[in-house]
Length: 353
Picture 1 (cartoon, one colour):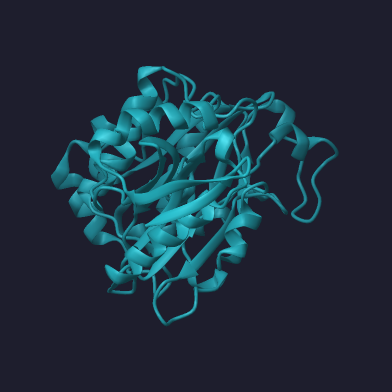
Picture 2 (cartoon, one colour):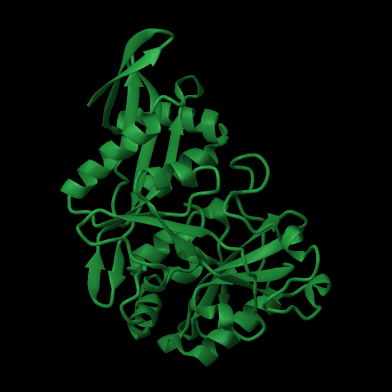
């Protein structure tokens, strides 16, 4: 695909094509300049973990080139969903960047449109993401629908957070102190990595026992027809193994088969947050989940636990009105994008990407 993009009165050809493995160096350089990714080797490993090692498949991506130089990048991360027992082929609109000298010339929309056209032809049914306030309008112009805000709640741990919180109103200054927003705080890329934590054990260590993890997964309730991530042993081992993200597994009991809570610790402004990514206990039992979350609160050195999804009403958790990521989606088949009540996603499904 070729575009004629005006440049100071001239018409310069820009080629839109599928990215190749040998583009990775130039893509990482572009992401560094546009998104704040540094020369830190963790970003190179993060890119590979996210886009190449994903058990759902390598991320389909497109680049825009001018005179052989990459000036734009657009990626969609494969993310299989399931509704009841029915698989749903989906992707997430994730990393995208345009060289500053080429911005406001339609490259983002051209890359996105080219990607959606090919993905639809390949049988992809749905695309979703959680864009920040700055990028959301661009997606809405391209046919995305704002599904709604994923509700979140906190369980206070430290003394400053102990006063009783009302579901309808937060004490003055608490929301600002927590600084729970769609995007990272500070310089882009700055808050991606986790804080060191001694809670439990590294998540990868607990997940290494395939038999235990498989038994726990098999015991989980189907969960109705709401859209959720298609979980497998391979998915969980990939999702929580990347060391710089610092995921920890806090045991739910004395035996590995009793399950665990997977979380990570990071700074949120002046607060230290422990975000709960997974709660995996036998049979998905509600009482065991509450006990597991209580054990996690005792084990972790943080100001509060942050939770989204079905567990957000668990004992000790207080809703945070108006907080949480904003979910957007677009159907690629004849069916419309699903409304908010059709989704069942937690922080493990949504953060980082």
